Image 1: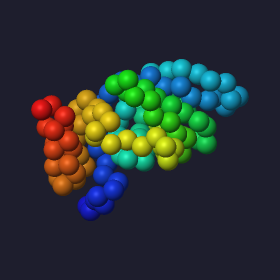
Image 2: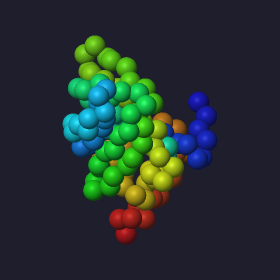
Image 3: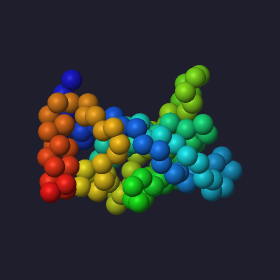
Length: 122
């Protein structure tokens, strides 16, 4: 597998507070687990179905990220996996925050996050 330096993906596990639009365009609130994150996308796992094309925001470590639900699929045991595409003004990077249990999908990506975390701790 190859990783581009500008779109490295990370597996993680962190509870997040989500605001989203339902099918009737009503704003709803829920809890979800942040499963994966990159600069421009995230994958959330929730009990509620997040409708494709709807606005969404979630808060993690006192940082709000905004975007649109790209797709959702139901896992029969775990729940709804939803892919979120971040707005251009709402991108994630390791200097903003580092989710719990962060694991790079590429070895070279892990070096970048480790450097950022080590720099922040000093």
